[in-house]
Image (tube, rainbow over the protein chains, first blue to last red):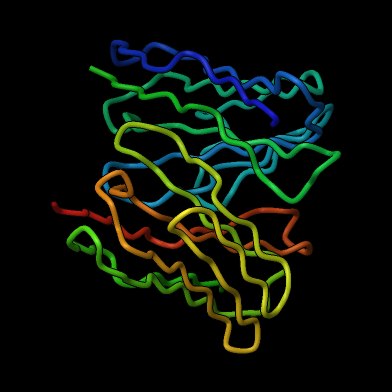
Length: 116
Length: 112
């Protein structure tokens, strides 16, 4: 089956620094990827839809300048948390759909971000 | 506004028992997913249901969809400890750019 690779799995950073998270589709091309965040014991909240070659579409309430998304190729999308603060600490998950078998979404392994 | 409601939110059951998790959604959907999430892990896709009356089964889990009632169920048969996890349903619409809306999740604990 299709595989989505997400790195890093966890990251600890100081307040004010920026963190980049990568999401790669390993054996398929993904024109669209989705980025979610999840707080402990809560559901997934969609942050943005990443479209290859164009600007990301952000959900209401998500700061575009804080969560920068780049989808430069059909296999890679990145999420950069800029000037991170403790309230940005969360579990971030990406997902992608295989264009050939579009029924399923495939999820990355997630990134646990802790901002000190 | 699209709403997806799951119940129960927490479920503790004994091994060998049967139970059902319910997922209600507020407007007509194009597809419905069930996912499993273990603590500290990402989501694992279990089922995708596309049409009214769809039923899918894998192992001790069976999912069904009633689009008229806007209801999906995830039935657990003869639960075992390995099924302990959080289960999410998610609803998707073609007109919503393929975005999924998730329920709040049901945390299942299966006790010996």
